[in-house]
Image 1 (tube, one colour):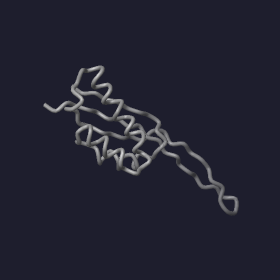
Image 2: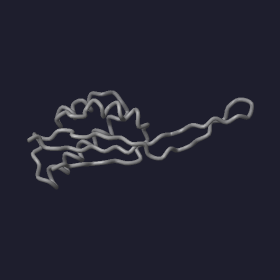
Image 3: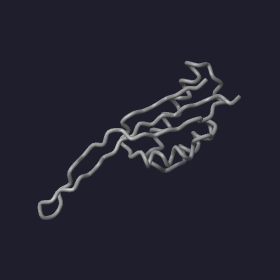
Image 4: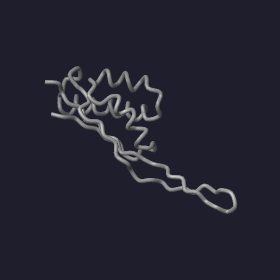
Length: 111
């Protein structure tokens, strides 16, 4: 049995989110929450909310034991890129890519 939660269109680049997800992948729920709380990255806030949501899904929808949960999968994929233009010298214009992320967390119970 697995409980999942996902969030879409988070305005953080996927490679920045991946750094935090690499820290929590395979850890038990309480350790993962502690890591996210103490990691000074912008992606920590939405990932913390996502972990809480996945834990709530596990408890309420699937009657899983919260103490036995661990992060089985933590995935990030790129969402749509917002394309902006930055004016530069001599009439030129450079493109600014504002990247978004789709983040998924899957929790499972230890056997």
